[in-house]
Length: 245
Image 1 (cartoon, rainbow, N blue to C red):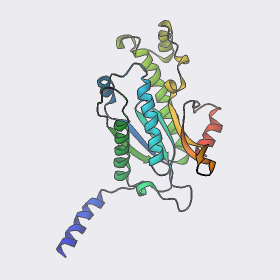
Image 2 (image 1 turned 90 degrees about the horizontal axis):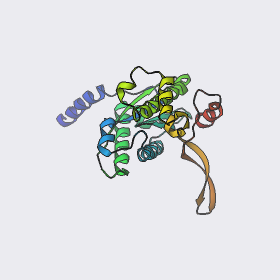
Image 3 (image 1 turned 60 degrees about the vertical axis):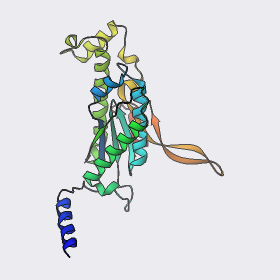
Image 4 (image 1 turned 90 degrees about the vertical axis):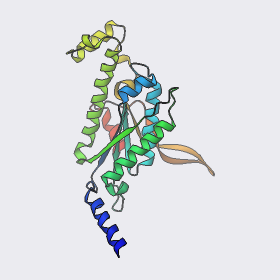
């Protein structure tokens, strides 16, 4: 009896800190590289946009989409990945780890850290680590969340390009148009950058043809979209409906 009562008492302490997010509301799971400003310097990343790092982040986003149950889409920019995770597709849809916050964030950050380090393509193998946060939000705010992250990506993009051309002292208190003009004077037009450099990329389900034992067959698989629209533009309406529903 003593062993059982001791275990029950310890589990009581454990359960007191166990919080669950509200079921059947969209969940955002965002992962960020820990101290990546220092990590990129130690690794020797190319400024302003290191495509080796970008491809690793794309691969990480796809891996997370495939391994976090209920993921609808993933968005990545810089050293972060945001996942849209649903548990309301059907009446019997299960939530990933029952939306237990400690489980969700600890497993997600472990998955990200494992995959990134296992697939590190840089010559200098500096260990990388990821943290995670999870929260729910109303259906009407889902698109606004990704608009916010994409706008952050755009701001960071111009900032990184500017910092690669000018010392920080010359960039202080400069507005968007001024920064663009300064880059242009150095022979770099921000508008000519690749889409993935300006606004990130998404991983979403697409219908693809794959080879099966009996021949070609149709599957829904997570694929990388390198040419995502500006989420606030009219062109994004059909894209968003197709990806999110």
